Image (spheres, rainbow, N blue to C red):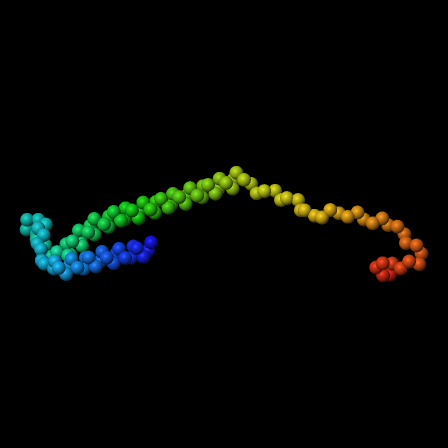
Length: 120
């Protein structure tokens, strides 16, 4: 999408330069009865374009900023409400292997070696 925007701006700039080269004539702009501004036509066109573009662009940027703030605020409220509604889950009991029954202590017959070496 960024390449499309760049191509459009380059085309707009090329059209503006072509217009300026072909219409480089002085024009008189009468502001009041005794106040006359003499300027070139491309400067007047660029000034008129910017006078229409800049206020609306600033209004758009302010609206986008305001909406992003509102979205962030609402997302924060939803996160807070979700944390308040769902307390931390209780820890589940540890799963262990079933305990094997302890071997019955049956005395070994005399003279039988101990399986783990000498008894303590």
